[in-house]
Each structure stands twice: as C-alpha cells, then as structure tokens.
Length: 107
Length: 117
Image (cartoon, each protein chain N blue to C red):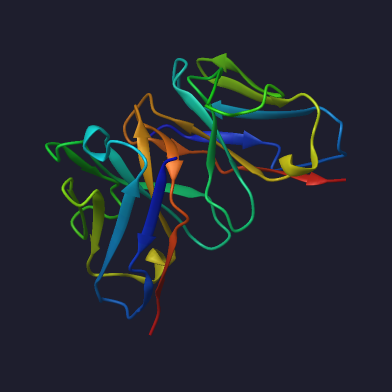
C-alpha cells in the first residue's frame, strides 16, 4: 500500500497569507492525486483531482501541482473560510488511500 | 444538486451488526460507482468499500473484508453497507461518497456508528 505523508501537520497563518501544503507518496502515483478540504463537523469536499485540476465550483485561489511522489496544494491568499483540515488521496494503486492531513489554523 | 443522505448509524455492542443506508438524488445514480469511507473520532479518512454502477465489481479494504458487505439498489437510488462482527475500532463517522474515477467528488453528511458495551 502506498503511504502518503502530509506536512506540516499544522500550519499557522493569517488571513491573506499564502499557504503551501505538501503531500509525499512512498512510491510514484503519477498524477493520480486529489486534495480535499474538511471543516469541523462537515464532510470532506473535493478541491483538486489529477494533481492540478480544480473540481467544480472551487475558487481559483486553490491550485495543485506535482507528479510522481511530491505534490503541493497552494492557497494563494487565505480567506477566513479556508481554515480547515486538508487531505491528499491517491488513486494510482489499489486501495485508494489518504494522507494524515494538514490543519490550517488561524495564527 | 447532488445529495447523499446516510442513515442507520447508532450504538451497537461489540460483535453486533448494523446496516447503513445512503439515499442519493440529483444525479443519475445508476451510472456511477459508489463508496463508503469512514473517519474515527479525531482521526483521518479511511476508504472502506467500492461498488460499480451495476454492482458487477466490489472491493473492500482489508480492515473490513469478510465482515462488511456493500450493495446497491438502483431502483431505489440507494447504496448500503451491512456491517457484521463489529469491533470497538469500527467506531467512526461513516460517509457514502460518489466516485469520480476512484476519487470522491460528492459526500454525504455522515452517520455515526459507536461500538461499545
């Protein structure tokens, strides 16, 4: 099973700042990686799929990059509603699985 | 608008059984594969099971293989998860999720399953 390691575990930033989240895979997943956002008490929401494609309705301030084993989710300028936990997920190898998450909190 | 509504969660004793349901609307249910994903309290996400649009192919995570059974009824726009031999570590919020080629593009609000004596 592919292991996805997300870093940092917690990111403390202020609104308006740029957030850079990392997801590293234990072996290549090509571009088969997605990012999800989860707010407290809510279900996850798909943000990015195939490493860099924004899902329907996702604002342009969210962008994804990377391929192979190293991936990045960037939030260009944090809005108050962006403070949440973010998970990466790979679908390259069975079973599909998730990273441990990065919490983006208000500094 | 896609809607997924889970039900059937609750408190069950170790070794017991529970059947979760997920009612879908807002899309052509019979054309999409579906999944169950869970989240233990304060923990991350764990994919559990997948069923194709016709039910012809089904997959499980090792952690639930042999204990959980996924099924669907396209006439009722519903997917189910039969959970047997429940353990303490199965305590979690259970989500159904619509497949987008092995990603999960729509999620229900979740139903809480608590396994405790």
